[in-house]
Length: 178
Image (tube, rainbow, N blue to C red; front, side, top):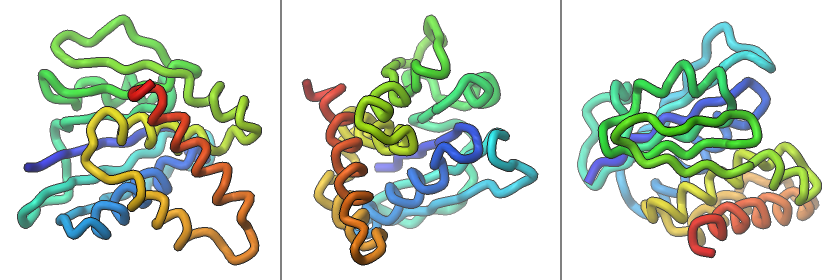
């Protein structure tokens, strides 16, 4: 099994954090993983992306030419990466900031991640709503592993950060599981 994921959005949307949390959770499950952040001239507001490859065997290269899944958080990223998903692949799209009527032979899941994050009281957790949606759709990583990653990353005494990220993740899962 190999699952390749490209995650893209604008700088400041938590693209790198989403990829890092996913990769760490995969590692905790004992699978092979590569997290490949793309640090370039992007700054807050510019397009940012990372690649995550998940496998039950050794991974040869961190670079993903065609992804099984795209997680796209804004329209400029959709335009830049929409050709990088495999036929019969999956596009998970933040419909608060981007929309598509379909891209041929791929499955599209469109949900308003940013609007959901705002309703939770923190726009910054739209990335975790998107991650929850991915986990609900793909089942490549156990949610409990992601929650453990959250716990290990949150500074001591900042339980409010942990709680809002857990809520965001659960809201994303509910989009798929109902």
